[in-house]
Length: 306
Image (tube, rainbow, N blue to C red; front, side, top):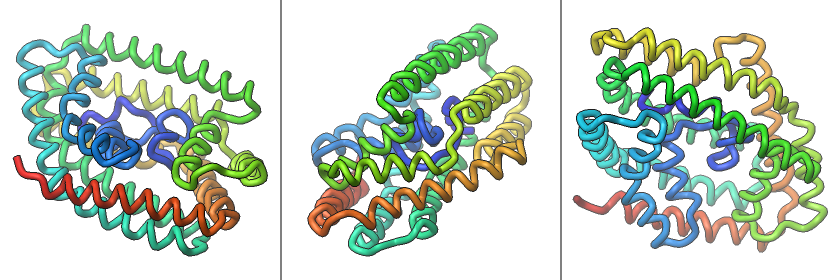
């Protein structure tokens, strides 16, 4: 599980996925989004350098670690961060390089989905690396910590509903609004025609807020039930159970939801392809410059030594 099951459902974009298209793993959001979403070299590098501290604070806000847990989690996160910097960041740099090539072409929906799949593989590598950390921690969680996690879920769900409602007052769903914000970052200012076309394409992807929210809640309950069952368990038992839970986050246990999600993802990739096809040469150059800056940041971070 690494500490990643506190985020709900796999989705289609790093930042917009947090609420809209579905949550990517939290560790990946911190370690990759801080690099790929912060503007400017110094901001990205600073964010990545303190990622273990940010991850610890986020986890502690859910589980309120005692002193012994805090020391262990803090040390393990630093070890995980060193591994990610040395082993994964070079692979992220390659993905950014590939994205720059695609930015100057006219990739179709499947090609966008292929790039997404490559990013997802990096998330899975991080999850697998962190699994033993979680398996050692989870059996020692206390009832009050699990109760705190349940309350945090309820708070997040309320916030999600409020943000969805706010987005609907603007005539779109949260997923589309977050995606548009990210597209403005990547391409620069979008024209009114491009914005309308993208909103129209996203409205046809089949995203269903009610269905998504039900899946989020089902997965939250699966997390709570699994963590409760593993209290006091040995590490091998915990690692096996968490691996099963991780698989549920890769692929829903609900066959109907799996089919829905696969189709929605394919449609979303096509929506991004349609927008890209309408962008100007200058907008594409803007994207290439941005991605090249990210690539340079990532390579510099990967080369850093302790």
